[in-house]
Image (cartoon, rainbow, N blue to C red; front, side, top):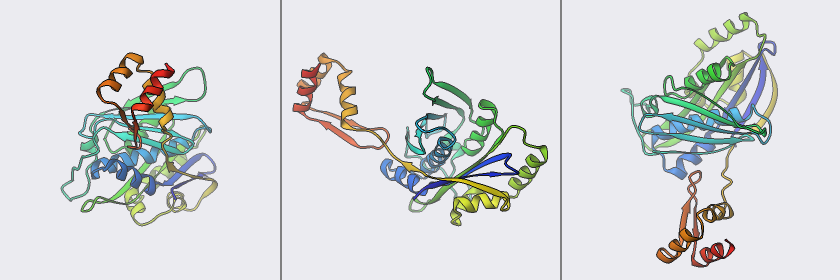
Amino acid sequence: MDYLQKAYCMNQSMRIYAAITTDMVKHAKDIFNMWPSSADAFGRLLTISSIMSATYKSGETLNIFVKGDGPIGKMTVEARDCKVRGYVVNPGVFLQNNDGTVNITKAVGFGEIEVIKDLHMRDTFSSTSEIVSGDIANDFSYYFAKSEQIPSAVGLGVSINPENNEILAAGGFLIQVMPGCKDEYITKLENKLKNLKPTTEMIKEGYTPIDIINEITDGDYELLETKELKYECNCSKERFKKGLKSLGKVELEAILKEDKKAEITCNFCNKKYVFNEEDLKEIIFEL
């Protein structure tokens, strides 16, 4: 089971979230048949998106877009109540560094991050920031500082066996500095992060969320809550039926005449929905 744990640290002047997301990253890799660079980059995005969701109230929705100019193309994630779903324009990307490890920075490239928040108000809120490195973690640290004015540290890791494309482990953390935090605590955290094990290494070694929190805080934390994380798509045939209705009677009659059916594949979970001749006639009759 994927899950997240939240704690206070540094005398309650910082919030820290740590998560294990191995199952959701495996699921996404499998349903989209992702190659290593796509799976690694998207896995990191799923991880930070699920953590960000935990910082919002129940029912509030985040739509997160990483629009890089690398071969992966645009990555999209929807997050709500610690449940995520998403997709990548090109799941078939595999680039390697000189040491044989998976390269995601070139696969993502440069561009921008956009976050649209539906907080159940009259209007949605949108914010953007540049992609500064392509490794997702640094990019979101920059996003929080620039677009939300919250000094933050982000660590993300996906451990992949490049030989067989197996997801071994995935997870990460988010640390946010709260208003009024003393400079001495910020300096202490910065020094700790300089010597911290790489996130991918911690994940590969089997660290749990509380292990990650303990590693960062040297045991000086107050655990607040634990939440389950999940990759979940809420698509249905009824939802796509409404979409077909929006095409209008003339276009639907043309589909019925030429193809006798309509096939729709969900971008978020790759599930296929088939509307046969009788289904199309029923939809046309309802218009």
